[in-house]
Amino acid sequence: MTTVAIIGCGRIANNAHLPALSELDNVRIKYACDILENKAVAAKEKFPKIEQVITDYKVALADKEVDAVFVLTPNFAHYTITMDALKAGKHVLCEKPITVNYPLSVEMANEAEKQGKILNIGVCNRYNKSVEMLREWVEAGKFGNVYHVYCSFRSFRSIPGLGGDFTTKSQSGGGVLIDWGIHFFDLILYILGGAKIKNVTCDAYCEMAKDMKSYKYKGMWAEDTKNVETGTNDVDDLITGYVRTDKASISFNGAWAQNIDVPEMYIDFMGDKGGARLAYGDKFKFYDGATLETICPEYDIPNMYKCEDEAFIKSIETGVKDKNNIVNILESMKLLDALYESSDKKAEVQF
Ligand SMILES: NC(=O)c1ccc[n+]([C@@H]2O[C@H](COP(=O)([O-])OP(=O)(O)OC[C@H]3O[C@@H](n4cnc5c(N)ncnc54)[C@H](O)[C@@H]3O)[C@@H](O)[C@H]2O)c1
Image 1: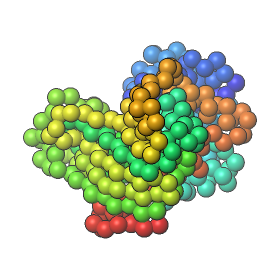
Image 2: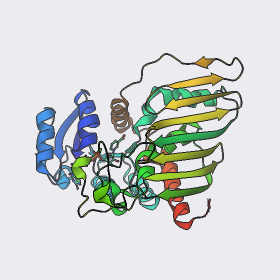
Image 3: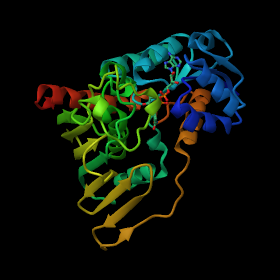
Image 4: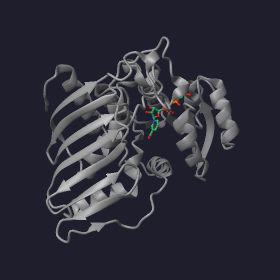
């Protein structure tokens, strides 16, 4: 039995990890922690497996019965809480992105190594069966030479929690690139078989809600954290650029908000023998260059969060690092930093 504490009882806790952990018989949820007590209390009411509610995560870190913690707070808090937890001898599953930048992410990886603890990152899409299949098909040569990847993660006027932590760079590390782009780029590097970055160029724009009070939207995700009166919006709502790796090149467009009401969430893999479009979080279609057929394999998409949490617990039990171990996610974080650096300098960044 692995005893865990949940730190941060917001959306990802309630919608993903608490339902998943409630179904795992080998997990005990001793604590639910949130600085806002009412959120931890509400989580306990919804998920009876939670034993106690706390508002200071250090209570859980001091408890010898706790083996592991789930860090499910806003991005800026990932670093401090994870470092404290590792130093207290706990294993950690920290939500994506690792934290607000690459250097702090490296420190987190080093601390996990030093303490001999598992530190996994919540890039949950790696547990989508489509992703594993695509990775295997690339490796097996079904695509031939994968020479280019294009991805689009674009939405119509969908800035989350405008003025709150999502749109404040010091708290989030960035906008659509770090929030949505991390999933897309992490999948691309993973499916390509662990591609390494060679150089990048990027432009980031913060255009759509320069005047936060007059920003118009139909629905706002994370609206409970919005603060258009006194908050900050200094992050990218649109991002575009180009990446060269030791494998394929990558071009991309991402937008939390744009004045085009045609949402796009997909990754295209271009090979000389075949190509595929992966619908984000969903299935893929393979276009066979030899037969000119479109192949839609039959399979079920698993609950990615449950697979992610199961893999974390298994890593704790066996000591074997899983694909979501921080050491396997650092390249994605390095890429995000390089893209932001390129945009700031208005120049290519080389490695
Ligand atoms: N894997 C995914 O697909 C996915 C999806 C959504 C969010 N996320 C990530 O999950 C994290 C949380 O996002 P969210 O949408 O749940 O945010 P949220 O604002 O809904 O929840 C965060 C909670 O953390 C609490 N909190 C903040 N500081 C704390 C502290 N020091 N101790 C205890 N609690 C604290 C807040 O009060 C809040 O209730 C973010 O890093 C986000 O990027 C990942």
